[in-house]
Image 1: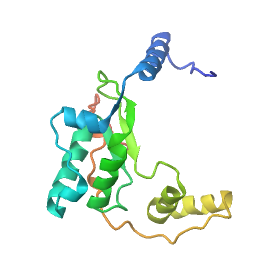
Image 2 (image 1 turned 30 degrees about the horizontal axis):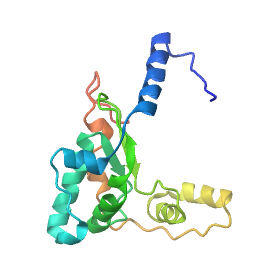
Image 3 (image 1 turned 180 degrees about the vertical axis):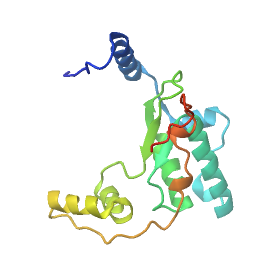
Image 4 (image 1 turned 90 degrees about the horizontal axis):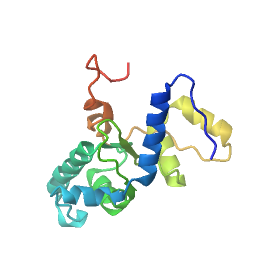
Length: 176
């Protein structure tokens, strides 16, 4: 293993960091599906709910995940049914390290973070700004660049964010 340590950190901060790395490496792997159901949440299959029930359940899941410090992003290209289905079938089933004693840590789930061709295409179509799109084409000239479209849904701006619940000394951890 190769590593680099900042001279800015104190010895205690470095030790805390490396302890955190070890804690993460040794943490139990648990799915968010299991963690949510352990809290008593019911997670019915998508096809067993009508649209209204599914939307309510989706937001229950989103807020349940946030309470476990799991936060979603890049969801606006998916309908509520498509998002809940993706969560129910794949995202919630993935096992991840769980550090239960970490009040400020967060797990971020980018729905387009898999870097598949489909993910990249959707990111370029719905989320990438023109500068990023042009840089991508300069780096990957053989790729097909889709025309930009605004995402059909507007959920991301309402999703809980990691900094929403983490107080700071001045009470505002939001980026400026």
